[in-house]
Length: 235
Image (tube, rainbow, N blue to C red):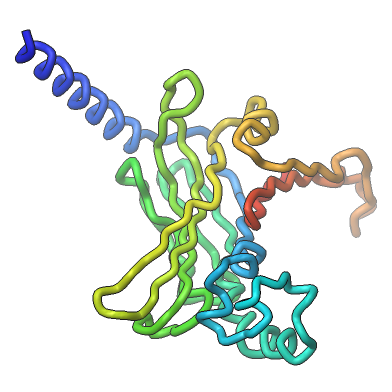
């Protein structure tokens, strides 16, 4: 009897794995753009002060309560690196791939083909040792196939942040910041709210006249916020 149960469990996981692999190779929907901003998540990370030497951050103070000297240091020396957490992501349906544009660091711009149920789209050192040896914070964006509502498989965009202590052996602290539903045009706002996002919609209700004298609708911009991450799209 127990052999039958064990075999049944193994068969179930093999079938589930196979279905997920098939799903990973399928083209999905239409091409679309998404913007991801992770700056506030970096500013709120409890290890930011440790990797940057900013005293107020070590004390857990929010950015608005930092000293002027600390804010100046951040803007001049540290912000350029942290801005690598801001990217434009385009899903290209014909190629079944993502084009990730990092405007603040062109070396991080590139094309990622979907090949698995977990795909790393973006990775950047956003604070600390930029050579990757000493203490640092790294920001990642994954695409993952997960079990959604009612056990249905759902693709999600998953921004994460990870702290490395720079010691040997290395100690790490990996944090999933949020999971945003992808390829779900119907009821996307309601789905996002169920996953803990704050939703803010603007525009879309007026027109402007372009240089050719044509009336053009103002795009609707929707911003989804959670744990310091802002994901936005327009249509």
